[in-house]
Amino acid sequence: MSPGPGIIGADALVPASLSTLLGWALEGLARDRSVFGLPKRSFWIGAGARDISVAVPGGRITTPLGIAAGPHTQLAHNIVVGWLAGARLLELKTVQILDRLEIPRPCIDAPGEGYNTEWSQELRLEESLEQYVAAWCLVHTLAPHVLGESAGNAELAGTRFDASVGYDLTGIRSEPVARFLDGLTDAAPSLARLRDALPPHLRSRWPQAMSARVVDTVTLSSFHGCPADEIEQIVEHLFTRHAVNVVVKLNPTLLGFDEVDALLHGPLGWKHVVLDPGAFERDLKWDHAIDLLERLRGTAKRVGRTLGVKLTNTLVVRNTRERLRGEAVYLSGAPLHPIAMRLAERLTRATGGAIPLSLSAGVDADNFADAVACGFAPVTTCTDLLRPTGYRRLPRYLKALTAEMERCDVTTVGAYIAARAAALADPLAGPGSPALANLAAYAASTRANPRYAAGPSQAPLSTRPPLQLVDCDSCNQCTLACPNGAFFDVPSPRDAIASTQERQWVLLADFCNACGNCETFCPQSGGPYRVKARFHTSRAAWDKDTSAQAVLIEAGGHRIITRYEGHEVALERLGGSWQAPDGPAAPALSWLGLLAEQALREVNPLSAKQAT
Image (cartoon, rainbow, N blue to C red; front, side, top):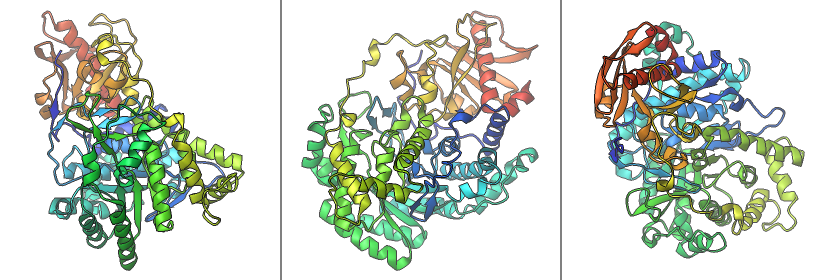
């Protein structure tokens, strides 16, 4: 079996069309099972009598929960799944002018804390634009079906998409990035094109009321080492050229090497995390950041926009686990949580709380309510979603918040923040600042909290038993941990190859970017993204796939080509099954064809019906 790609380019992902996605979603709802793999029991349909809405730059969102820019906000169907599970601020994956990157794979290693080597979009800019607008259409189309006809429009008024751009002034000022942002602030041309491409039976489902302004806020992810004056010019450009609110994402290095080192390597014991002193030297310094934010506040007021700050970006560290390539990796997750809390407290005191703060640093269901009590809006997550159960973890965040509000006997987030502050035995902030009081107390509590301490090392991948194409441990971890929703479990075809399990796991290779997260959680070795049956709907992607087994589904499912251990044939349908020419590999090839057809029924049920 081929080890799979070591380096892939920006054309590795093949996004599905809006027609395919809409048909897939509506068929899933009609079958009363799921939408894009998310079961209906995991949909968030509201907090009842409690108002958990919060203010963010540009308006309000009906839950304080968001998904940070990352692998879960790149493809349209994943953005929709995040919304279905309760996230009402979707920070779209960061784009940059360089949209033809070749990135070493795997690029994600998240055994508990997270490490990655991939930091921007893997699609062309025009593809990213279309995916984000398609997701906007899908959310509007699905809202009445999910939330009820009367609740749909009200809920959508509290859903926001935020763009994320990087990483320098030249790239953000460039014509391609400007065109991308223009396409999100006025998506009318894209909406018209997408609507016209739908078949009549789906076009009739097109939502009647849908704003063409998909985003009105942009998060700036300035790259590590970007100087203060360049950050200032970028923000001013976004304010004036694109007429958007801007949230500046700051790096953990702002605290300084000594304080970050003490937080990581003190009681929390992250001894295997080795800091890069050069990152602290290159990055924005504290005094420069405070001066910069003060000037930008004045600029925002002058042009009628809102300035926000997001804490934090990832942290550059040495690559000590050596599962990913390169000397440095980007750290996320639990180790950043105490760092972000300390940075937030210090920043709030320095600015008098004048700048709204949002959060993305080790957020999970167990600390979400605490983070909301500290005044962060929104509170966003990413690394936690890379763990098994994935998007299904999100409703727990909101249930934890509503349970805390019930305990405090309050019905609004503002009242909840005040109640939490009033209950503090020894407030660390003065009266009149309940959010800061909560933040100061909570930040202090995280510095030696075992929840944020280093855990036991994960067993090496090489010690696990080998993963097989057929009949694995059937743990479903690959399906639940995949940030792209690329894995499917399907009924096992039993008439062409020996198998003992009722279900088999297959991979829609079009959605797979070989990030490697499935391998982290698979109890067997080899990597599901390398070993499991891979099927494509794109000839171009199939031609580039060098794995030993793969399936190409052409013409809406009417023709299937299979490859298995060097054998490659086109399958013909005879009776109720796909038949391969006689030969030693015929049973396996026919079995792969049947497996692909089962998967096609999941991804594009309308095409599957037409094919049969």
